[in-house]
Length: 314
Image (cartoon, rainbow, N blue to C red; front, side, top):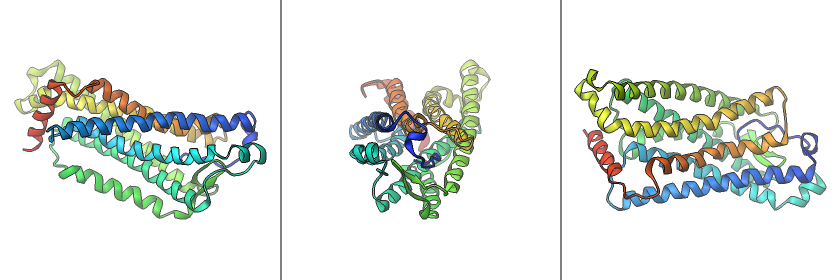
C-alpha cells in the first residue's frame, strides 16, 4: 500500500494482538472482495455491450471500464497479500512476527501496488482534463484506437516512478509497500495525489458549471455547441459522477498521510486505508448501476452512445 505506514509493534497503537489481527485483516479483505466483484460485473456489462454489436462505446461506458481495470488490479493484489497474512494468525498473535509474504515476493507486490495506484490516479486525471477540454474549451480530441493516447503516457509514468526506486519496497509487519526509511516514494505519490485531486476538482467544477449553463439557457449557445446539449451533456454528466467517486476516494488518504506526519497513529487507520482505496471500485459499480441500470436493454442509452460515437468519428 502506498500511504506511509512505518512498521511499529502492533500492540503499541491498537487494542491488543488478537483484536488488531482481526481489524487489520477483516476490513481490507471484506471491502476489497466487494471491489473485486464489482469490477468483474463492469467487465461483464462492457463485454456484453461490445459482443452484441455496440462497438461504438462512448466515453461514459469506457471510463468506468478503464477505472474497473485499475481497481481490479489493486483489489486482486490486496486479496493476495492479506489472504497470505490471514493464514499466519498464530505467528502474528503469539510470536509478534512479521507475517507478510517472503521478501522478494513482498518487494514485487509493493512495486505493483505503486503501479496500480498510479494508473488509477493518472487515468482519472487524464479523463478529467479530456472532459474539461471538450466541454469548457470546446476542443475535440482524437484519442486514437483504444484511447492509446491516454493509456501510453500514464503507463509510462506509472512504471518509471516505482522502477526507479526498487529498493524502497518490502515488508512492513503485516503488509507490503514502501519500507521504513524510504518515504520519498510515498511522498512523491502523495504530492501526485494532491496535484491530481486539485486538477480533478478544478475540471469537475468548471465542467459542471458549463453543463448547468447549457441546460438552463440553450437559446444563447451556438448551434455547434447545442450538440453538446442534446447528445454529449448526458454523457459528460455521467463521467463527472465517476470523477466525483475518485475525489471522495482519495481525500481520506490525504488526511491519513497528514496524520502520519503529525505522528497520529492507530491500528484502525492502517486497516481503513486499503479499504478506502477499494471504495473506488465499490463506488464505481454503484454509480454504474445508477447511470445504466441493471439491464443493457436501454434503447435511449444505446441511441446516445451511437450518436456520440458518430460525432467522435468526425
